[in-house]
Image (cartoon, rainbow, N blue to C red; front, side):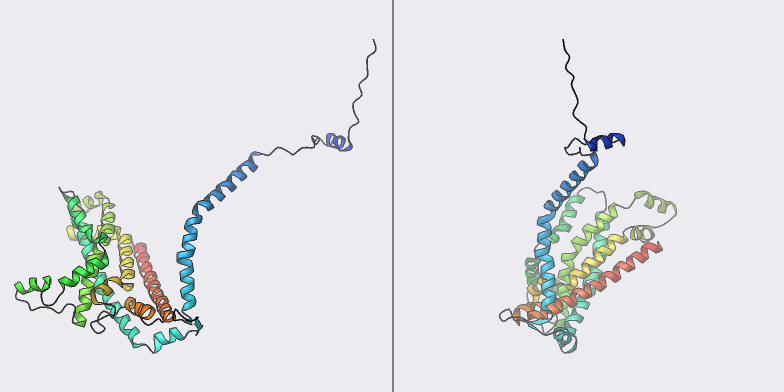
Length: 333
């Protein structure tokens, strides 16, 4: 029986060279992917999924924050009355604001006084209320709820209620003062008293927020520190200034910043309490009222945009200064 000789096909030149060099010959197909490439694909997929998740929020930030900021900065260098096309005027709006508008200085002064009248009582009362609510007593939850109610109330609605309370002739506050033999106070008809009345309403509205922040900070202070201070003979006031205040300095600084920002931007309570004119006379003529008048009363949108950026610059400087003071105090501790 004859055996057939099977001859192998001639080897290719490339395979021979690969065998001689110790490298496996090419099979003509694609090389298998390693684990590194698979991990890279998964990372890219996760990155794409992350961008898809944040795309709606990013779009909202661009449309409702970045674009209005850029457009207001653009308008601050133009003259625009909402009807005709904007006309470029350069820095004329800023020059007019600082050089030839006396109402700007009045609004700046009133806003500064209003901020001081609001800031100090808000922080002091908020800290006192937070300390009083930081106790383990029966029914303390009810008192906390009552203290936080003004935080959820409408500012305009509460300002209207306070307007009836501040009525000179038959207002509730003057009736109470009359029982003690005190003459009626012109809360909303005298320029000086009107700003004080506005400050009272704002403090009443701002104290609950400050109380929430400071109460949370007080609950984070370790109790053994108070016990150690008691052992060292420190009294209640000494423990407050030496233990409590240094440990809540961060939240306290936050309350300072937020209260200043809200005071400088105040508008709705002033509008509801004394009207859009900032009266009586210019007693409650704040920067927010001035901005509203020029934008929607006089249709000087470019001038109002310049005023808005000046308010932003003032708030930025005050915030940076406050944060630097707070950090310096933390370093000293």
